[in-house]
Length: 201
Image 1 (cartoon, one colour):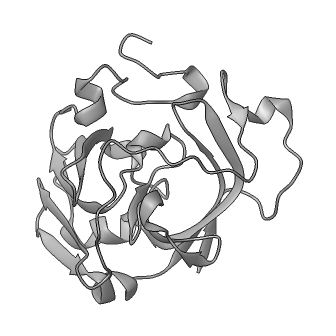
Image 2 (tube, helix red, strand yellow):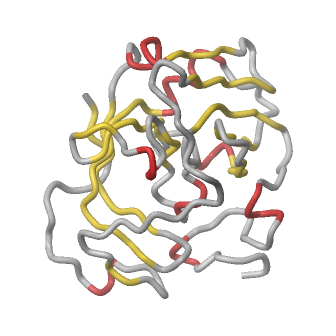
């Protein structure tokens, strides 16, 4: 099991650990969703990667769990100004899924989409190289439905609307294609350290 960039435990947070405009949510984890939480069981869950790839592929729950497991320990930041420190998610690195489908050399972006229809766009560089996961555990327990369970995309270095809940798949593209919040005025990328909250930031 790989543990990626971060730390263990609830270390005291320095002020410079907070991106601009953020506050430490402590033990709280606010629930914010654009949609009603679906009733989606692990047996019903699936994840597909297609678009500009050599071999499109879909995974069910068991097949996804058969891939090498990986852990993220570190911080997450929401565009609504809260941050959580020392969180621990477990799942599979997105690199493991992408190694199966093999994106074309022309690929530059992805659109992540949920079982609910929610979408968000990301540069391919932001979800490769150990920077993104399909996560199904939080703090050693199955990920709760209100937080995206049974599985969500996790892209912790960007604002958390990019970490699509109830993840269903990725479409690999050679161009940027705005998702739900991006079409409604949010920033195309969402870097917390640059306060890329809204279009034009």
